[in-house]
Length: 266
Image (tube, rainbow, N blue to C red; front, side):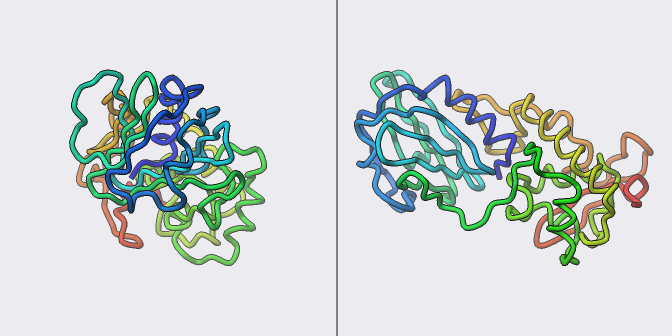
């Protein structure tokens, strides 16, 4: 699933493609992928800015509507400038005078919301990882009554926005925190390490245009390169690069967690 670094990379990519462009036509090839509103509401408006909140893209327009996009498991946004045929699994087409923005989603789990400005589609969203207001003290208050594993807590979008499975494993390895520990047992000093690791890992992943393990690509078909820098994720039975112990895999909340049993003893 695209996480914050992947969505941020898509956002930066789309700025060069569609920001400042006017929508001239639309084609909902799979109408159920439009979760709210209608694509016709954005015909004739200009995409004025491309933004991100957690794992959501949202596009401000010159009209009354904001376009929200969630890529979910397998969604990608493809840019086509010429008249070449669409690739497979295209569900929604947004046309401009100079090209087409294609929403490709083989699993059809993603979606687009056409909402009036100020009406976002999420119910609860935590602070952004880079928000200065997200301090160890604030995070500790969010976790004080939560005995779930710290890895599971990091995946909760109501705690911190944008972190998903890949980066939660990498963050906790970098912070040397056991992913099985109860969230409310993590000390203030340890939470500072978690936040520092969060910002370090996410920034590095953004610089690498995210992580491509299977589906994720930018609009030009290029994948992210952060898979080359992963330390534990998807590395079961491989040697830890620090201590040479074997990386272990467990399942938490139906998600794979990877960690080093020697390095992550805190």
